Image 1 (spheres, rainbow, N blue to C red):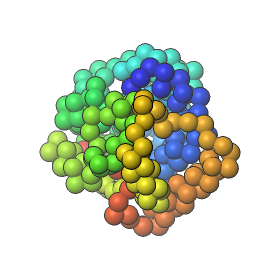
Image 2 (tube, rainbow, N blue to C red; image 1 turned 45 degrees about the vertical axis):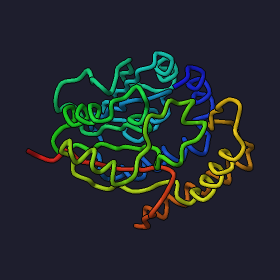
Image 3 (tube, one colour; image 1 turned 135 degrees about the vertical axis):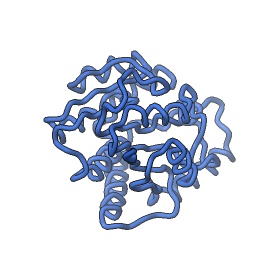
Image 4 (cartoon, helix red, strand yellow; image 1 turned 30 degrees about the horizontal axis):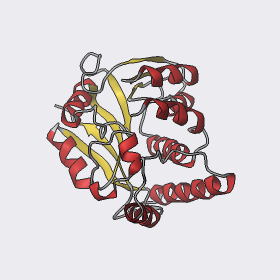
Length: 248
């Protein structure tokens, strides 16, 4: 990821519809699945928004965040309690079977990450029965300028992500598409950007107007509520999954 992207994310992530929507979706999905005193790892914690939210929801938990970027770590230490340090998901600096819950949100698709090696590492440090929560971008054909800025190496489908984690020995609790109500808009935007070539790639992380941000927040919140009631979508801009380390 380009260094300046971290500062931008840190500024907007508390209220930005994308980051707020993902945080709320994760917290909704984890409700009732995690013990209050769990050991939790945010593997690729970025600028700290998710781990701060996890700390609020699970105040008795032991939380640890790592990120490969010292810039991200600097922002995260300001926002979140718990132990936050530099580290790579390709080689996690922890003993085997350490964590009850691992989050790795919008991480394993980056060029700096070997996704197979990182998934093997997640398997190694997860306790038997432990959960791993994953969020990644969907569909190679949905690439945009933003993928260039954040150094996207690969995008996924549900079947590709299931296969990746299944080969490492994980069982699937759930794996499906997210950002589905916005999907038609995302497709239209990608088609338009290909028709009108930009001279330089630009990040999709921008500060929207209050009206736009509120509308998009309501849209992703509505989708999460539908998911809570069992609605599943056949396509979307992202893949969201929860995997469980099976007992040996």
